[in-house]
Image (tube, rainbow, N blue to C red):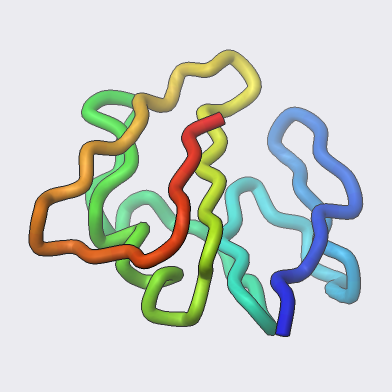
Length: 93
């Protein structure tokens, strides 16, 4: 099973193929997508993406994870703690 594809992307709007939802931020995994609500895990521009955000999609079967830094690259990257294992590839873009 593959992850959904991004159909379009512009400032504050992301559309996923096969979904009628327009996201501001989203998480994709094999067979699904959902809104990425930064407040759930404490993600902010700085310190950036939280390990809990990665853990969720890794547990859903993601083999390659691409973490976008936003249109102005304001979102800081991610430092994974040793206890969070990912058998695939994580890329900050």
